[in-house]
Amino acid sequence: MTPGDPPAHDSRWLGATELTHAYADGLDPTEVASLLLELAEAEPTNAFCLLDPETTLEQARASADRWRAGEQRGPLDGVPMTIKDLILTRGWPTLRGSNLIRPDSDPWQVDAPAVARLREAGAVLLGKVATPEFGWKGVADSPRTGISTNPWDTSRTCGGSSGGSASAVAQGLGVGSVGTDGGGSVRIPGGFCGVVAFKPTYGRIPLWPASPYGTLAHAGPMTRTVADAAIMLDVLAGPDARDWSALPPPVGSFAEAAGAADVAGLRIAWSPDLGYGVNDPQVLETVQRAVAALADAGAVVEQVDLQLGDPVWAYHTLWFAGALAVVNGYGPGAMERIDPNLADAIARYGHTSSQDYLRAVDCRMALGQRFGALHETYDVLLTPTLPGVAFEAGVDVPAGSAVRDWTCWTPYSYPFNLTQQPAITVPCGVVDGLPVGLQVVGPRHGDATVVRVAAAYEQIGGWEGLGGTTKGSGQG
Image (cartoon, rainbow, N blue to C red; front, side, top):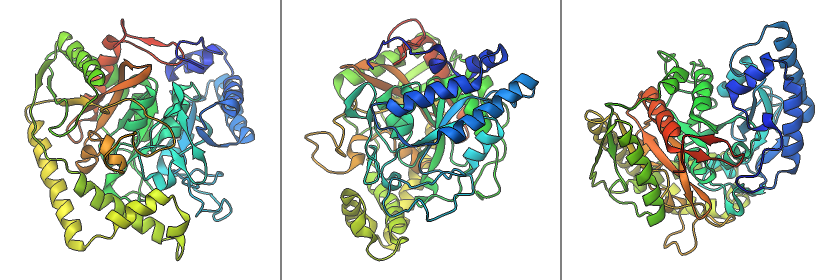
């Protein structure tokens, strides 16, 4: 498939609201699920790591019965979704891209909070999608599932760690997917694959079991439109007693915030590089046009010189301490059986002292204070999602990189895991046939404003995804 190909079937590209309207008019959720399962079996990017047609179709038939009886459960009833294979899903093994976990090592009888909320809402789960081992890096290959690629160009990476999620959504294989983001893991593949991906404020979507990466890790919706991401967030955002750090129920509806889609009078800061990033000139030009479109829509946009130092040392300290802990949990010899690049990174960064760990926490707190002060003046901050477009699949860093850490090409994502702020990527154009993303960052608990700005850009900026679905009036 190439960008602009006609959709194989209208229902493949319908959003959540369009699908539920079609169900109300008589479309059978089983028909939609059957089509998507057939397409998923043949998709060329290795996005899926588990398909279970019998279980999926059973869920679709139950939804069809509810629609016929007028007992539908809400805006996601019958809507197809996928789940990243880091997230516990009842009845399906969660193997985390690792050969350290056996499918028969657990009865797999418990849903994580996000999956439980989707089931309660009547969503149809299509399957599980690929992740690098334990979600450790920004691309989606693993010892267990191999290399997952980008549907825009299957020689390129789809990004990661929620790469299977982004690839599936971009291909119309599910309206949305639940991913996780500990350093950019929904936003990176969202940017590379041309989908919307939202990391809400830490605790907005409960996580259980707790991530080995601690309070860096968020869960988030990945969809083709901001409206669908907002609908998903409304479903996923309720508290769950298993997560002691989960936030109380939100006030108001994120779907309503997306519907507002108005930036008139909002104060927006624009940083091309956070003070230390280096962008591909064409990517920067594309993102600058998106920023200008928001200014033309009535936002008060000012370029800011943040003069930040790169906090990657603090991120590495916290991240790879978590990676060491998770691998050590599998006992002696585990380090020799994992992704060699993960073992190498743990050897370089994971064995940290308590004092180094606390220094990293101090850096994290100072960074949070810095952005807190920024948001006393500005409602949101805009950056590029990534400094370049998707590079060759099967490697951790682009060709010619001076360092071998995946963080070297993701400078605008991990800072906002350190600070726990909400951040969304929305597609804003194409460079060399590959998507470019605009990142919208808000203050902690400012999720609704982030949704509002992203939805406003989506309406005015213009975008054609793989299915030819157009949003706005012109190509970004």
